[in-house]
Structure formats: structure tokens, C-alpha cells
Image (cartoon, rainbow, N blue to C red):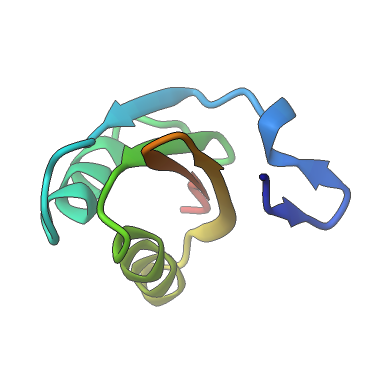
Length: 88
């Protein structure tokens, strides 16, 4: 199952960086995403892998707060792929 933002199928999106935070409990995956975002160019996408069900909500809230674009999630066997576009 994939979440689609506008006309973009997230399963077809190529991320500039993938952060594997599977197995980390909240707030670990969000902290990993925050740390990794500085290594992604403005306009590029960070993909976060997380098995914590709260991550998508945390990342969506954080993205809006700091000015990045939360693109959505793709549910995968045992974890979710969370997509964020760096906007600044």
C-alpha cells in the first residue's frame, strides 16, 4: 500500500538519502531524520524507515514546524517508509 501525494507515486520516488531507524523506539526515528536532513540538498528527499507506528505523525508534525514538506508514507512488511522533502 502506498500513500500518494498529488500525482507522485511515492514508490517511484528516488530518495537522496535513506535512514534505517527500524527497531528504534520513539523519538529515535525522528532524531535520526533530524540529524540526516542536513546531509540532503534543499529540494531533495529523505526516506526514513521506521517500525515505530508513531513516527509518521511525529515526522509530519516536525516537518510542518520546521518548514520541510512531509510527502507521505509507504507501508511495507514490518515497517513504514516515510518521505520528507528538504525545503530550506
